[in-house]
Amino acid sequence: MDKRIEAFLRDIPALEGKHSNLVREGVRARLAKCERQFRKDEENESMRNRAAEMCDRLCRARIVEEMQQRRGTLTAVHLNIVLSVIDGPGRFPLKSG
Image (cartoon, rainbow, N blue to C red):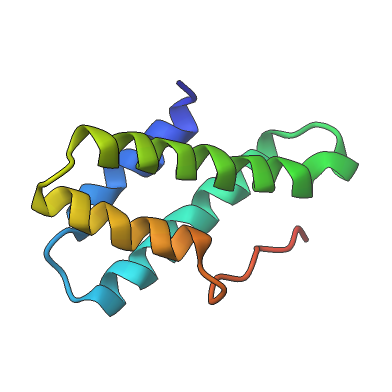
């Protein structure tokens, strides 16, 4: 798996057990960091926004995979909150610049 996605996934458990607003804020910040890295790593300037979109899709897929592995646990509930942030309308994509 992509080391950037795995780095995002390693940061997520630190948010577990915190107030849902702090979880949401933390997920947004970590996802934005991951998106920036994907943009930075994309050599073709015109493809940088697509690279960030790919980041979101890959992060989402890993969270879903982790949720399935942890079904029925408190961690799965936490990951569901994480997923809602990734999917949610309140998250604005980071613009390159």
